[in-house]
Image (cartoon, rainbow, N blue to C red; front, side):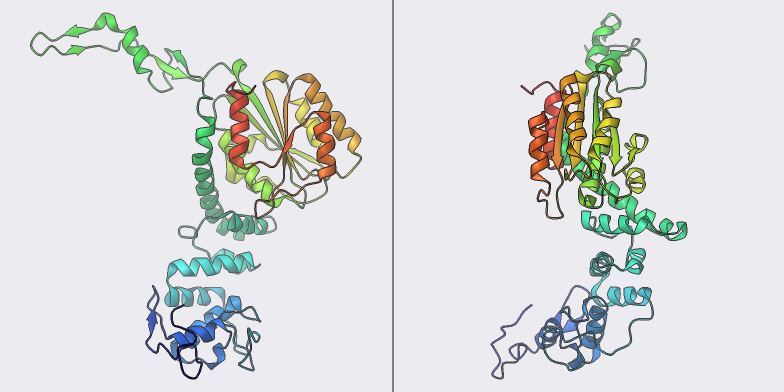
Length: 400
């Protein structure tokens, strides 16, 4: 916002700058008009400025600030105004694009979707919406109860958000997981060519050109790289609380699981639980499918989730069991502690990850968490990167 509020002799915020100010979309507003929009006095505006006020009112009206055109025309956010609403979200979307450009249009529609407007979510352009955890969480919250026709309209948007957020997370996690693939030489094609071993295996075919002195090796016996034997792999079992308070952590867990599923040295399982247990391991390498399968809600039975995880253990010393929860156990804590002790006594590597709220702050039952620690399960509030480091240290053998 340009212009000095005290520049005019009459105290008008726009008196010190009467010239129009152009935004990126070419909407000319003088400083006084911009101040009136900010203070919710859009009813006093005319012309192009009135169009801007009306477009902003569709989202920010009803006493919420910018563009709010109160019936009495004064005060901060003086109400939603008496003007007729836009006939539909498409007309509003077109007006936003014309006034502010496509970038701002997507931002405003995303804010409207986050405020509870499904019609705005359906109008978002999958190719240009800005990926964010908040937008993904909002769209997924709609997806559960939609008919297939509307869900089909949301799928491209969800797919792009999941793809880009997973790629960004993978780029952050990759350094922590470096070295966890254990390639083995093989004559069987399929993996990448192991050039040093191929050269050593074919030295007998080396020929020197008498004219140029160039040495040529014929790769008659190529050697490829493949992953290590399955018996040498580690098993990671993510046991994720999907009760009603766990929405933000559930999305992070699903994206992280999909990244970890791509690590050759790991066999990754995804167990979702509330009062029931659902094994979603078949979807773990497809984050979109995994997120669409998860339904957040219901109560909490952590003991039941860990009991299912225990049934997956074959080699305890090479099994990682990671519990993601707020530790608000819905029943007696005794069975939960018993499951933890059984896993620890068997030799499994166990870890409790406290749930994080929308701001990334831990939110969990400190009392239950303390009892889990006493039973042998360390508890920490970890970001996905810190969790990947924990996995990397154990699988890579650097943990002491």
